[in-house]
Image 1 (cartoon, rainbow, N blue to C red):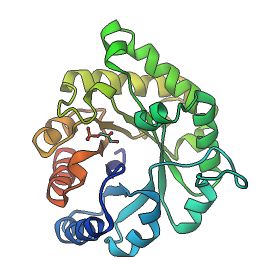
Image 2 (cartoon, rainbow, N blue to C red):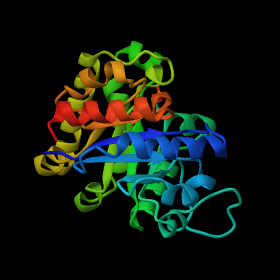
Image 3 (cartoon, rainbow, N blue to C red):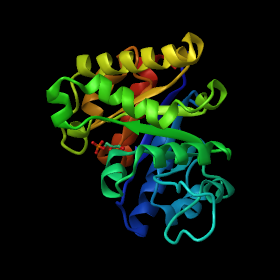
Length: 256
Ligand code: 13P
């Protein structure tokens, strides 16, 4: 059985008082979830160390960003070592919003992955095509390029500390999730690409999350898909009740 994750990406939302409220509500709503599901949230960087003791221990805290540099004169950056030293468990890398906003190159993303895996951090590597690429029909080779450029320099042992998140850009924040058949097609293809590079054993235990307008209403249908191993949730993770409902749908669909 592959590890199942439901991760809330808070993005650049929530003032401090709202973070406090959300942490309190998460304690109430999430306490009955089994430990077999991995739950995570990614607050904005300054909140990371203060949020940790406010959350139930089984909700892991991750970072939305990490530097490609190791340390030193990099004003505005946060290094993997610094995040690791705070007790941060994982970091997102390659989210479409940061790829676009900061013009992150393939090489820089690959470097961020390597820097992170030098520490105890796990990597949630995000990929996804734009509407234009989807409509061109060439989306699988586009995604293959993103994986190859960002991850295929890793050996199999390192790859076991990576989680992939497929987030079609056209489904992010639009309220419109991809259709179940579209999601399964891509996830199955991604697992096949990993199998070709690293073998069946790595591919079969490799978690691939879906992200893009996951909500309580479409969560069960998404988690029912064979090659979906959880979700990376944006908007619906900002309310404890909807985030908990998504996590519960994962537990029940995956029978964990
Ligand atoms: P939404 O769930 O708001 O579409 O965001 C998805 C996302 O970008 C998670 O990283």
